[in-house]
Length: 338
Image (cartoon, rainbow, N blue to C red; front, top):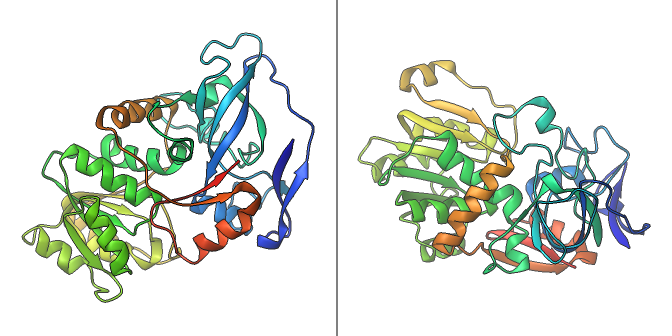
């Protein structure tokens, strides 16, 4: 079989396709023939040697946590899935349920566990899950990280009610899933982007308020205007240093800011007085458990939510896909097809 491999000193030039022996499932394992994987910003960081759990501690990685495939064989003792089942990989192979722990959070695909960027892969039966039949392989491949991150932020960590206002930063995978989930739950949505074209696409998906942060750098002001001066109940914070100050100004008293990314950089200091003054909650989150994933899939099935796949490349053209991500060309998700 063939696999994607990235080696130190990292970078797009270090992405290679290599030949490996076909894996065989051991006890409790399933052999999956991959159909598609999707890109996350984490993968971009890993390829460029900027991810702390990835290239910083290894000389070679097989990327991608998010994949769709079909079970081709099972090892002794496997009961969760059967040959022929279509499954999604799970971001954390060892976080089935309960609270996160160090042990659970060190079982992520791509690093430290070799990822889904290969034609055949053996996974623990605990690290895959069956998925809604109506979704395409490409759509299934988007669920493990981006969708689950949005789901957990909106429905597990925050305490929201129908009619509450949520702010979704940008039009990448997590934010577009957040928009779709929020609309299904009856939340009012505000979405930001530097592109009027992308904002128009978000409007077509049901976004209630649109803000171009390039033309309106102080986007907290239109957020407050849209909420009658109260502020947003929830903000999906993906920017980091470039956006956190505006998030703090946009959130309501007692509101919730979910810290899920640092796309615009890290390192800007926080003024604790701002949090004290508005009693806001800042919470970091890293994807979620299998139990959360399966609950999310039940909701996706019920509401027939179709993930937005913007670009599809052959898996052998991974570099072109990463270059598209680097250029911010996508709306929703970028997928590699096997």
